[in-house]
Length: 276
Image (cartoon, rainbow, N blue to C red; front, side, top):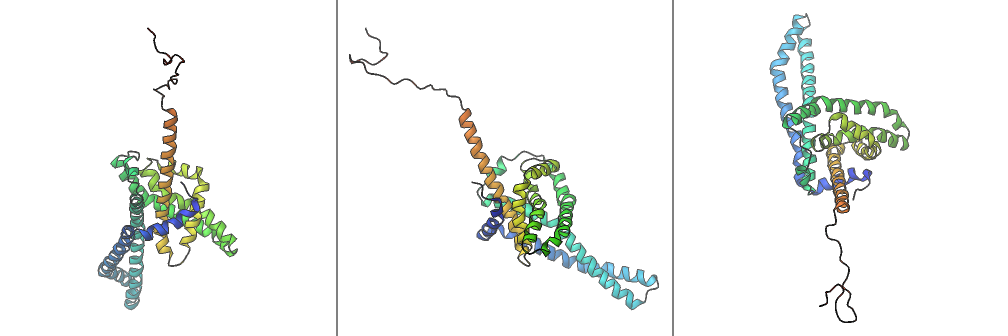
Protein backbone atom coordinates (compact mmCIF):
# COMPACT_ATOMS: atom_id res chain seq x y z
CA UNK A 1 0.00 0.00 0.00
CA UNK A 2 1.33 3.42 -0.98
CA UNK A 3 1.21 5.80 1.98
CA UNK A 4 0.69 9.55 1.86
CA UNK A 5 3.61 11.17 0.07
CA UNK A 6 4.15 13.54 2.98
CA UNK A 7 4.89 10.64 5.33
CA UNK A 8 7.83 9.15 3.43
CA UNK A 9 10.50 11.60 4.65
CA UNK A 10 9.48 10.75 8.22
CA UNK A 11 9.42 7.03 7.41
CA UNK A 12 12.92 7.46 6.05
CA UNK A 13 14.16 8.69 9.44
CA UNK A 14 12.87 5.66 11.33
CA UNK A 15 13.95 3.21 8.64
CA UNK A 16 17.44 4.69 8.57
CA UNK A 17 17.82 4.52 12.36
CA UNK A 18 16.55 0.93 12.41
CA UNK A 19 19.05 -0.29 9.79
CA UNK A 20 22.66 0.36 10.86
CA UNK A 21 23.96 -1.09 7.58
CA UNK A 22 22.81 2.14 5.93
CA UNK A 23 24.90 4.34 8.21
CA UNK A 24 28.18 3.54 6.48
CA UNK A 25 26.84 5.11 3.28
CA UNK A 26 26.61 8.45 5.08
CA UNK A 27 29.81 8.30 7.13
CA UNK A 28 32.15 7.55 4.23
CA UNK A 29 31.69 10.83 2.33
CA UNK A 30 32.42 12.88 5.46
CA UNK A 31 35.62 10.96 6.18
CA UNK A 32 36.68 11.10 2.54
CA UNK A 33 36.01 14.83 2.44
CA UNK A 34 38.00 15.29 5.65
CA UNK A 35 40.90 13.31 4.20
CA UNK A 36 40.72 15.25 0.95
CA UNK A 37 40.61 18.50 2.93
CA UNK A 38 43.77 17.68 4.83
CA UNK A 39 45.61 16.67 1.67
CA UNK A 40 44.41 19.71 -0.28
CA UNK A 41 45.35 22.04 2.57
CA UNK A 42 48.87 20.63 2.82
CA UNK A 43 49.41 20.75 -0.94
CA UNK A 44 48.00 24.28 -1.11
CA UNK A 45 50.42 25.54 1.53
CA UNK A 46 53.34 23.72 -0.06
CA UNK A 47 52.74 24.75 -3.68
CA UNK A 48 50.13 27.51 -3.99
CA UNK A 49 51.19 29.66 -1.04
CA UNK A 50 54.74 30.49 -2.20
CA UNK A 51 53.57 30.78 -5.81
CA UNK A 52 50.92 33.36 -4.96
CA UNK A 53 53.10 35.20 -2.46
CA UNK A 54 55.97 35.61 -4.92
CA UNK A 55 53.53 36.74 -7.61
CA UNK A 56 52.20 39.47 -5.31
CA UNK A 57 55.71 40.51 -4.29
CA UNK A 58 56.65 40.71 -7.97
CA UNK A 59 53.65 43.02 -8.39
CA UNK A 60 55.30 45.38 -5.84
CA UNK A 61 53.11 44.31 -2.93
CA UNK A 62 54.80 44.53 0.51
CA UNK A 63 56.20 41.15 1.49
CA UNK A 64 54.32 40.91 4.79
CA UNK A 65 51.03 41.79 3.09
CA UNK A 66 51.72 39.44 0.19
CA UNK A 67 52.22 36.48 2.52
CA UNK A 68 49.20 37.39 4.64
CA UNK A 69 46.92 37.71 1.63
CA UNK A 70 48.33 34.50 0.16
CA UNK A 71 47.54 32.58 3.35
CA UNK A 72 43.95 33.84 3.24
CA UNK A 73 43.67 32.92 -0.44
CA UNK A 74 45.07 29.45 0.21
CA UNK A 75 42.55 28.80 2.98
CA UNK A 76 39.69 29.95 0.77
CA UNK A 77 40.94 27.90 -2.18
CA UNK A 78 41.29 24.80 -0.03
CA UNK A 79 37.77 25.27 1.37
CA UNK A 80 36.40 25.73 -2.14
CA UNK A 81 38.09 22.53 -3.31
CA UNK A 82 36.59 20.69 -0.34
CA UNK A 83 33.11 21.95 -1.19
CA UNK A 84 33.49 20.94 -4.84
CA UNK A 85 34.77 17.51 -3.84
CA UNK A 86 31.89 17.03 -1.40
CA UNK A 87 29.29 18.09 -3.98
CA UNK A 88 30.70 15.60 -6.47
CA UNK A 89 30.89 12.85 -3.86
CA UNK A 90 27.46 13.30 -2.29
CA UNK A 91 25.34 12.18 -5.30
CA UNK A 92 27.38 9.00 -5.64
CA UNK A 93 26.81 8.00 -2.03
CA UNK A 94 23.17 9.10 -2.13
CA UNK A 95 22.66 6.74 -5.07
CA UNK A 96 24.38 3.98 -3.10
CA UNK A 97 22.16 4.73 -0.09
CA UNK A 98 19.06 4.60 -2.31
CA UNK A 99 20.06 1.16 -3.62
CA UNK A 100 20.99 -0.11 -0.15
CA UNK A 101 17.60 1.01 1.17
CA UNK A 102 15.78 -0.97 -1.51
CA UNK A 103 17.78 -4.07 -0.60
CA UNK A 104 17.16 -3.56 3.12
CA UNK A 105 13.47 -3.20 2.29
CA UNK A 106 13.60 -6.64 0.65
CA UNK A 107 13.20 -5.32 -2.89
CA UNK A 108 16.20 -6.97 -4.56
CA UNK A 109 13.89 -8.01 -7.40
CA UNK A 110 13.80 -4.37 -8.47
CA UNK A 111 17.43 -4.73 -9.53
CA UNK A 112 16.61 -7.87 -11.51
CA UNK A 113 13.67 -6.38 -13.39
CA UNK A 114 14.91 -2.86 -14.02
CA UNK A 115 15.11 -1.63 -17.59
CA UNK A 116 18.43 -2.72 -19.14
CA UNK A 117 20.74 0.22 -19.74
CA UNK A 118 24.13 -0.21 -21.37
CA UNK A 119 27.23 0.34 -19.27
CA UNK A 120 28.43 3.15 -21.51
CA UNK A 121 25.09 4.94 -21.22
CA UNK A 122 25.15 4.56 -17.45
CA UNK A 123 28.69 5.89 -17.36
CA UNK A 124 27.81 8.92 -19.47
CA UNK A 125 24.65 9.55 -17.49
CA UNK A 126 26.55 9.10 -14.24
CA UNK A 127 29.07 11.74 -15.27
CA UNK A 128 26.28 14.04 -16.39
CA UNK A 129 24.32 13.55 -13.21
CA UNK A 130 27.22 13.62 -10.81
CA UNK A 131 28.92 16.71 -12.19
CA UNK A 132 26.94 18.84 -14.61
CA UNK A 133 23.31 17.97 -14.04
CA UNK A 134 23.42 17.74 -10.25
CA UNK A 135 25.26 21.03 -10.11
CA UNK A 136 22.60 22.57 -12.31
CA UNK A 137 19.87 21.05 -10.16
CA UNK A 138 21.53 22.23 -6.94
CA UNK A 139 21.94 25.69 -8.45
CA UNK A 140 18.28 25.72 -9.44
CA UNK A 141 17.28 24.68 -5.93
CA UNK A 142 19.43 27.43 -4.43
CA UNK A 143 17.87 30.02 -6.75
CA UNK A 144 14.37 28.88 -5.80
CA UNK A 145 15.33 28.96 -2.12
CA UNK A 146 16.60 32.53 -2.48
CA UNK A 147 13.52 33.66 -4.41
CA UNK A 148 11.14 32.12 -1.87
CA UNK A 149 13.15 33.29 1.17
CA UNK A 150 10.91 36.35 1.78
CA UNK A 151 7.96 34.01 2.25
CA UNK A 152 9.49 32.88 5.54
CA UNK A 153 8.73 36.34 6.92
CA UNK A 154 5.09 35.26 7.05
CA UNK A 155 4.84 33.05 10.15
CA UNK A 156 4.10 29.39 9.48
CA UNK A 157 1.99 29.84 6.34
CA UNK A 158 4.83 31.50 4.45
CA UNK A 159 7.23 28.70 5.40
CA UNK A 160 4.71 26.06 4.30
CA UNK A 161 4.27 27.76 0.92
CA UNK A 162 8.03 28.15 0.46
CA UNK A 163 8.64 24.48 1.28
CA UNK A 164 5.89 23.43 -1.13
CA UNK A 165 7.39 25.48 -3.97
CA UNK A 166 10.86 24.09 -3.27
CA UNK A 167 9.48 20.58 -2.90
CA UNK A 168 9.15 19.71 -6.58
CA UNK A 169 12.79 20.29 -7.64
CA UNK A 170 13.98 18.62 -4.45
CA UNK A 171 11.91 15.48 -5.06
CA UNK A 172 12.99 15.31 -8.68
CA UNK A 173 16.62 15.44 -7.60
CA UNK A 174 16.03 12.68 -5.05
CA UNK A 175 14.42 10.38 -7.65
CA UNK A 176 16.55 11.12 -10.72
CA UNK A 177 18.75 8.10 -9.98
CA UNK A 178 15.73 5.79 -9.97
CA UNK A 179 14.35 7.25 -13.20
CA UNK A 180 17.59 6.96 -15.14
CA UNK A 181 19.07 3.73 -13.87
CA UNK A 182 15.98 1.68 -13.01
CA UNK A 183 13.35 2.91 -15.45
CA UNK A 184 15.71 3.74 -18.30
CA UNK A 185 14.45 7.31 -18.67
CA UNK A 186 16.40 10.10 -20.26
CA UNK A 187 16.76 13.31 -18.29
CA UNK A 188 14.03 14.91 -20.40
CA UNK A 189 11.69 11.97 -19.79
CA UNK A 190 12.45 12.07 -16.08
CA UNK A 191 11.67 15.79 -15.95
CA UNK A 192 8.43 15.24 -17.87
CA UNK A 193 7.39 12.44 -15.53
CA UNK A 194 8.24 14.56 -12.50
CA UNK A 195 6.19 17.45 -13.84
CA UNK A 196 3.21 15.23 -14.64
CA UNK A 197 3.32 14.02 -11.03
CA UNK A 198 4.18 17.41 -9.56
CA UNK A 199 1.47 17.08 -6.93
CA UNK A 200 3.01 13.92 -5.46
CA UNK A 201 6.53 15.27 -5.86
CA UNK A 202 5.67 18.56 -4.17
CA UNK A 203 4.03 16.80 -1.23
CA UNK A 204 7.08 14.61 -0.66
CA UNK A 205 9.53 17.44 -1.25
CA UNK A 206 7.67 19.88 0.98
CA UNK A 207 8.27 17.76 4.08
CA UNK A 208 11.80 16.86 3.00
CA UNK A 209 12.75 20.52 2.51
CA UNK A 210 11.20 21.44 5.86
CA UNK A 211 13.32 18.80 7.58
CA UNK A 212 16.48 20.10 5.94
CA UNK A 213 15.74 23.60 7.25
CA UNK A 214 16.37 22.38 10.81
CA UNK A 215 19.91 23.41 11.82
CA UNK A 216 22.42 20.64 12.59
CA UNK A 217 19.81 17.91 12.10
CA UNK A 218 19.78 18.68 8.39
CA UNK A 219 23.10 16.81 8.15
CA UNK A 220 21.11 13.69 9.04
CA UNK A 221 17.93 14.53 7.15
CA UNK A 222 19.79 15.07 3.87
CA UNK A 223 20.36 11.30 3.96
CA UNK A 224 17.10 10.11 5.48
CA UNK A 225 15.19 11.95 2.76
CA UNK A 226 16.91 9.71 0.21
CA UNK A 227 15.85 6.70 2.28
CA UNK A 228 12.28 8.01 2.24
CA UNK A 229 12.40 8.40 -1.54
CA UNK A 230 13.56 4.80 -1.90
CA UNK A 231 10.74 3.58 0.36
CA UNK A 232 8.26 5.52 -1.75
CA UNK A 233 9.49 3.91 -4.97
CA UNK A 234 9.45 0.47 -3.34
CA UNK A 235 5.79 0.91 -2.41
CA UNK A 236 5.02 2.16 -5.93
CA UNK A 237 6.75 -0.89 -7.37
CA UNK A 238 4.72 -3.28 -5.22
CA UNK A 239 1.54 -1.45 -6.17
CA UNK A 240 2.37 -1.87 -9.87
CA UNK A 241 3.10 -5.55 -9.28
CA UNK A 242 -0.36 -6.05 -7.83
CA UNK A 243 -2.00 -4.19 -10.72
CA UNK A 244 -0.12 -6.26 -13.29
CA UNK A 245 -1.07 -9.47 -11.50
CA UNK A 246 -4.73 -8.44 -11.50
CA UNK A 247 -4.64 -7.58 -15.21
CA UNK A 248 -2.97 -10.86 -16.08
CA UNK A 249 -5.53 -12.83 -14.09
CA UNK A 250 -8.34 -11.12 -16.00
CA UNK A 251 -6.71 -11.69 -19.39
CA UNK A 252 -5.82 -15.34 -18.73
CA UNK A 253 -7.78 -17.57 -21.17
CA UNK A 254 -10.19 -20.03 -19.68
CA UNK A 255 -8.96 -23.34 -21.10
CA UNK A 256 -11.24 -25.50 -19.00
CA UNK A 257 -14.93 -24.83 -19.45
CA UNK A 258 -16.96 -25.86 -16.41
CA UNK A 259 -18.96 -29.04 -17.02
CA UNK A 260 -22.64 -29.22 -16.08
CA UNK A 261 -23.22 -31.17 -12.90
CA UNK A 262 -24.27 -34.78 -13.28
CA UNK A 263 -27.90 -35.22 -12.51
CA UNK A 264 -29.16 -38.56 -11.27
CA UNK A 265 -32.30 -39.75 -13.06
CA UNK A 266 -35.23 -41.47 -11.40
CA UNK A 267 -34.15 -44.76 -13.00
CA UNK A 268 -30.88 -44.59 -11.09
CA UNK A 269 -28.71 -43.81 -14.17
CA UNK A 270 -26.54 -40.62 -14.50
CA UNK A 271 -27.47 -37.85 -16.88
CA UNK A 272 -25.80 -38.38 -20.23
CA UNK A 273 -25.11 -42.04 -19.69
CA UNK A 274 -25.66 -44.35 -22.65
CA UNK A 275 -28.22 -47.01 -22.05
CA UNK A 276 -27.80 -50.40 -23.58
